[in-house]
Amino acid sequence: MKYFNYKEYRVLSNIDEDKAIFLLNSIFSKSYQTISEYNDNKNSFVSQIKIKDFDKIIFKIPRNRNSRWGERFLTFFRGSDSFRIIESLKKINDIGLNAPDPIFAAQKRRFGMVVDSFYAYNFIEGREAADDNLPEVLKSLQILHSKGYTRSDPKLTNFLIKDDQVYFIDFRLKRPAVFKKLFIMINLCKFLQAEQKAIGLIDDNLKDSILFKTAFLLNDIKNTYKKIRRNIKSKFCRTKG
Figure 1 (cartoon, rainbow, N blue to C red):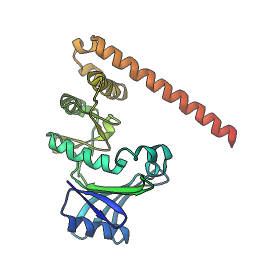
Figure 2: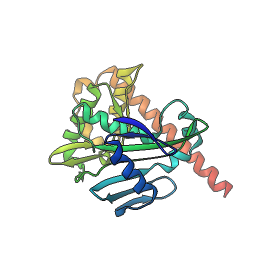
Figure 3: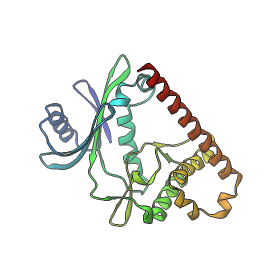
C-alpha cells in the first residue's frame, strides 16, 4: 500500500500507481461499464463496474459520511472512511483472514477536512453467510479478536462464503488501546445479540464470566439508548413536518 497525490486527491493504492491513475481517470470521466448497481441514494453509491482489464470492481462513494459535519470534523485528525475501509481490508488479509482485495481509496480535503472520498476493491463471487455458517463465522470473528481487533457491524449479512471460506465485508477494523478485553468482548456480544442462534456455540465458562456479563449488559444499554434516540428523532421529524 502506498500514498500518492493526483489532481486534488490523496490516493492510497494497493496496485501500481500507473494502473491506479488509469482507474481514477476512468472513474472521473465515467468511462466505465456498470455491471450491477446496488445502491444510489443520499447515503451511498455502490456499484460493480468494469474498466478494461479490471472486470470485477466494487466502487463505493460513502456520500453520507462525506457530507456529515461531525464526520468531516473527525477527518482533521484521521483519514476518511474510505481510507479506513481500504486499510481494514488490507489488514484482514495480512493477519491471515479473508476479505476482498483492496484496490485504492481517494480523498479530497478542503480547509483540512475531507469533503469527498471514494474507494474500490475486488468483487468476491460468494454467497451471503447463512445460519448454517454460524460456527465458521463465529470462529473467524474470534480469531480476529485474538489478534486484538474488533470489526464494525458484526452480523451474519456482513460475511460472505466462498469455497467454504469466510470472508469479511462492509467493515472497519479497530484496535482498542484501553479496556481492550472489554471492547473485544462487547464486539462479540454485538454479534451474539444480532445472531442469537450463535449464543449456544459459546462456551458456558465464558458466558458465566463477569467480563462477558458486563459486556453483554453494556451493549444492551447502548442498543436501548440508540432505539430511544431514533424514536425521539422520528417523532421530532414528524412534528416538524
